[in-house]
Amino acid sequence: MTRPPRRTALLCALLAGAATLIPAPTAQATPTPTHIHFGTCPDSVPRPTAPDTVECGWIEVPLNWDAPTTDGPRLRIAVSRVRASGTAAERRGILLVNPGGPGGSGLPYAVTKRAKLPESVRRAYDVIGFDARGTGLSSPADCGAMGGLFDGDRPGADPVPVGPRAESAYLRSLRALADDCAAGVGDEALPYLSTEQTARDMDAIRAALGERRTSFLGVSYGSYLGAAYAAQFPYQVGKMVLDSVVGPWDWYEFDVVQSRALLRQRDTFFTWAARHPHRFGLGDDSPAVRGAYLRVRDGLRERPVDGFGAAAFDRAVYRALGRTERWAGLADGLRTYLRDGTPGTLRPASALDSADSRTFEAANRTVKCADGPGPTPGRILADLHRTRRLDPQPVLTGMEASACAFWQHRPARRTPLGSPVAPPVLLIASAHDPVTPIEGARELRRLLPGSRLVTLDDDYSHGVFASRGNACVDSTAAAYLVDGRVPSTDMRCAGPGLPVVAGP
Image 1: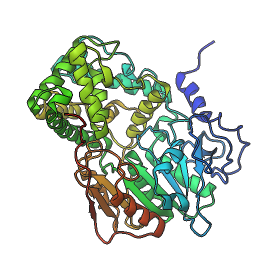
Image 2 (image 1 turned 90 degrees about the horizontal axis):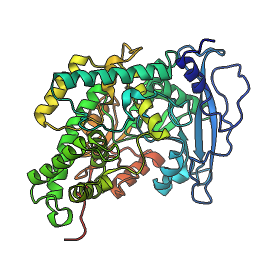
Image 3 (image 1 turned 30 degrees about the vertical axis):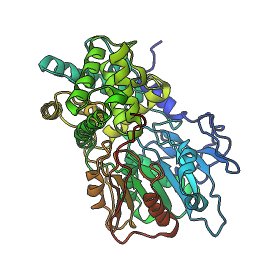
């Protein structure tokens, strides 16, 4: 008997991805969901503090909203809800939330993000989380081995290619990753795990909840998703807060901008660590700390520790540079390795090969490559050469869209973003965020007329509203969400500066 193609099996998995939430639905006469059946949440969703409760359910949506036939392929989208805690008079509707990625699970985010929101916002809105298609419990993407992404580092292996042979091997690994996603996700589904289709899912959630408008809080990639929703459904937009904004470029261009910002942030980290030589022992000036950093990376590249080598080190650095509260752990990890040869706090708590990480990495590439044309292999190498001229040892961890050079079903156009008729949107950015550099917020604002940008000055972290504990930012966003007060002009809030280190 001939074994069915893997893509057919994976499409079946896509259609059954959220079946653990509640029993399967009966057939519907229309492709548009009319109700969400809420019930008990899976264990992955934390319980909010009493008396608040969280409930979960699903909606069924077409795989392709452009051809929403009743007998065509469909997906189940997992949805969570924590109801507004205020009175009926205080209620302002629903606030959909998205944590970013692409690839982040949004189902638990209704609980975790809501707990950090200002009380006035919690009283005013039903906070709605959802796993975007291809993530979490919503038909999770599976790209298999992803070209060896989940393999442990081999001695001598380096994710930054130097020289023609290494560059050719680098391009082959990107092709293998793309081929694995094509085989794993399947030709039928690959083009439709996109931001544009997810925005249609968002409006289906709105309709199923019986709401006239969708208010939305999107962080990082969530800002891109919000801008895509505004492009398609400008008259259904209520209030929209886009935090740590992804610029309105194609994904590969965004990745290049981010990679250069990471170099600037790493230099800032070196200077910061050098101010505390007795605490970290890495040197008393920036070149000395950089030298210590390179010794650690070179050592792990040549002799990985239990599979933790150069690629794993770069992933740890990428993660740490985005949030200043992780800088001390990064510096401590460098010191620990130099002292006893172990990664210490460099090694992340969760392994890359966990099920959640595999889904995240697969969804990340699949969504980015479904959102617009990818680069050519020649452009990838040219940009790599330019980046290495800026710094011979860059961090390429965030260059996920490079795989789009070899993607099947490459779209001919980019995802539309923004709308001249959408209501004013509140954009929020950290002045020195290396993950979503602030120039992206400035560019997106041009596509959303009447919008305002709130900048947290002297801040170096990713994620601002209801995250940094800044009263200026949080009160401005709360007044906008609850009372509709749009600042008369762009605003600047005083930030916390670089981390304060305890001890000598």
